[in-house]
Amino acid sequence: MNEKRCGKPFRKRCTMALKDELIKNVDEIIAARWQERDGRVVPESKDVAFLGSAVKLEATFLYADLADSTSLARQVRQIAAEVFQCFLSTASRIIKAEGGEIRSFDGDRVMAVFMGNHKNTVAARCALKINWAFSKIVKPKILDAYGPKLSNYTLSYGSGLDVGEVWAIRGGVRNDSDLVWVGRAPNLGAKLSGIRDGYATHITKAVYDALNDSSKLGGDPRRSMWEQTRWSDQDNMIIFRSDWIWEP
Image (cartoon, rainbow, N blue to C red; front, side, top):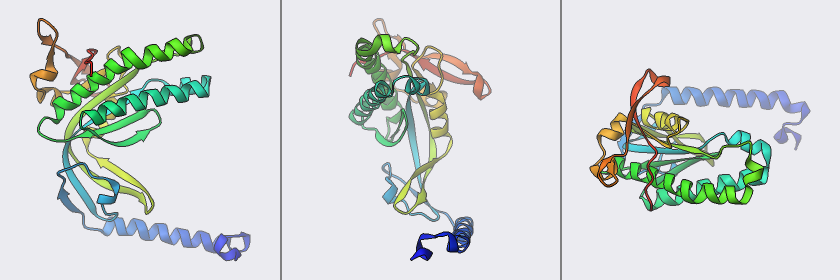
């Protein structure tokens, strides 16, 4: 029947029904009492209820983000698709091998969550391994295959890490939802992955201070793999950056 399909004679009635549903939904969210529970593992969407439910985690968030992908996509769509897939697949395989849990893809960016006693050390090592794979495998193979067609594009990426306490809540509607991460760590991790200063990996001081020497020192003789700097976009906060690579 037309009424169910919101045809022209019934458009106003259907619009009012949606309006009432939206108002009711927002009122229910505001009125709900939040129930917080501690998370021992990284949750999935199905593990979190829609209304008033939050999973509290202490976790390290890693974002790996391909640079200037919009410019690339404007040039040759097929090449852009292959670059995206090579980058995301490579980063994801390393994340999984290091015990990270992938919880989102956003275009040319992947986000991973690390938990446990050595989450910062493992996540930092993971970022350096992604840098090795990008430098030694992804970039040279892409340039070897499509170099002349990428003359107007600089193939690069960035990783960003932060650690902290977050809430995992459920966003969206039933059968079409995902986890939303509420806290500083995912926000800063994402922003750090967008820094383009010639260094592939950027981490907060909180992550750096928790690193074991295995992810802090490298080379022969042993020396720091990280350089302290100031982040002008965030009130000159202290962060650490690295362009070291770690072969998987």
